[in-house]
Image 1 (tube, rainbow, N blue to C red):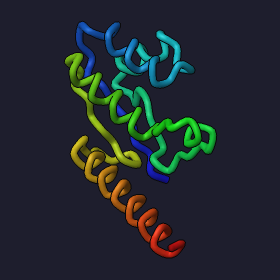
Image 2 (image 1 turned 120 degrees about the horizontal axis):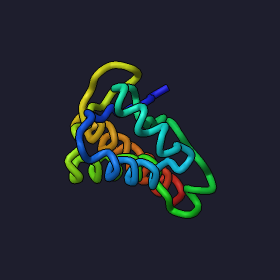
Image 3 (image 1 turned 30 degrees about the vertical axis):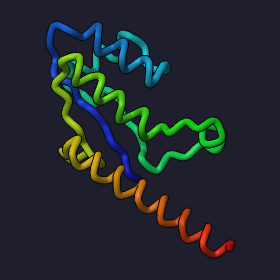
Image 4 (image 1 turned 180 degrees about the vertical axis):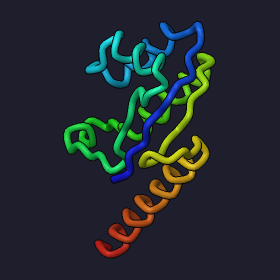
Length: 117
């Protein structure tokens, strides 16, 4: 499992952060998100191994959507802490992982194309 979770430092802009998080995960209630931020708990998470064939067919990349949410939170002024499988990590490490993953996918696609020629 490659679970990425976020903690957000409590400040005066919770409403902005809640709106951004709900855009990513509408199953979380306003009070649930607020309570998690206020108690310094993990606010939202995402399994990097997640795959949904229907989203793939629609061209939705949930990994990218999750990363974009982090960027939106940071642009809104949030102090975001990134955890990988419960251990403090960084956005840079997440970006490196995503870049490596994209390179592997590209290489596999290229290999498949060469073999089918």
